[in-house]
Every structure is written in C-alpha cells, then in structure tokens.
Image (cartoon, rainbow, N blue to C red; front, side):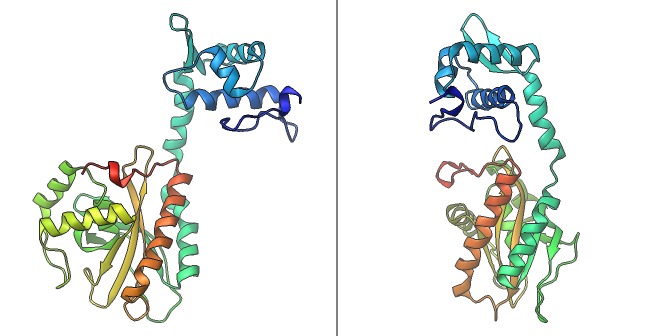
Length: 278
C-alpha cells in the first residue's frame, strides 16, 4: 500500500489528495489538525506515527509550516506546537460567526417538524431577549415580538440559558431580580429553581409549563460557545392543547438535538452535566 493511501484510525482527516488538491497541502493541514489536538506538543516521531507518514516527509512538512509561522519548535523539549498565526486564523472564525443567521434554518426545520413556533433568544442581564423566530402555520399559535423580553426564571429559553450559568452569575440574577411570579406556575423559591436547573442540565432541555403564560407550553435547549458557556437558546412553543405534558419529552429531545447541531456548527462545546459545577 502506498504512503498516500495509508490511514490510521486516529487521524483527523485523510491525507490522500483528491479533486486536484495538492497532496502536500492536505498533509500539511492534517498535521496542523493533529497538533491542535495536542496543545502540549508532539515529537517528530509521534507526529509521523500518528499521521502515518515517513519521518522525512513529516519533517519536510513541519519545516514548511514553521517557515510560515503556523507552528513552532521547542528545540529543548524536542516537540512541535501550534503557533500564534494558527490561533489568529482560528479566532477569525469565532469573530465572524453569526449564530442568529446560522440558527434560522434550524428554526424553520423545527417548525416544519413540529408545526409550532420556534424561537431563538439570548441572555441580557436578568432577562431573555428574543432575536429570531419561525412562526407556526397554525391559526392559534405562539408569537413573540422580536426584541421582547422574558424573565430568565419564567421562560423556557431563559431557564435553558440559566441552567448553565456559573454560581456567581446565578446568584447575581437572583439578587437583582428575585423570583417574582408571572403566573401561578412560575418557580418562586431558590431551592425549587436550583433543583430545576440540575434537571435541565441532566436531560439537556428546559420545560416551561404555563410558567410564562397560561395555556402555553414550551421546551428549550442551550447553544454553547467554544468554552461551553451559554451563547443562546432555541425553543418550540405552542398551546397546551397541541403540546400536552406527554408531548414535552418528545419535543424536548428534538430541540436538544437541534441545539447540539447548532453548537457543533458554531464550533461550540456542550459541557457534561456530571462535570458541571454551578
């Protein structure tokens, strides 16, 4: 088997040239991706083994990347690492991403699949602010004016965002706003709220059971950034007549999976519930 056709299970991508792409370019990008997975650096022999390339070929590619400032070599330790130029290129993706535009096709898909209104909101202080919406085609439907706000503790989007806040931020929200009742179903005690937050992290989505508006049910899930912190949240909302209690878990799983797709597309990371320290 030729070197260009060999591939190990741990490699991030194929080193085989295709579609007119330069084989050296593809291999060089593979090495960058490999080094990005090892922030502490790798020795030449380890890079060659994991990339399934000859040491001489690996060294030539590394020297080319070094000359362009993409990687650096620690001669004392004998390892190669990602350099600041690669960081700047990666960071430009974070600066250019538009999570609202990215989310819109997913909101429309949720409306097609559920028949209900889908929303996207972000946290601003102690409230959730709605930035995008895909309206239900039903005559009786939930409509939220873009730019409108809802209390974090009394809305699906708000609770999905609130569940992943660090404890200091959560305490600040409680101190600034408190847990005023919007309806008779609104969470109204800190202990009740904290139990709800733990449940949301465990199952991956929040439920609003007539807590913001009587007759309205909602499920929501958080979109996370590259650090695992809340970036935004998406939701599906509709009248209790069409979203009874027994349908909440089905819609919740759908919204959770959709939020995970958006998170992945944005380069985000979903923190593990068992490792999360509120």
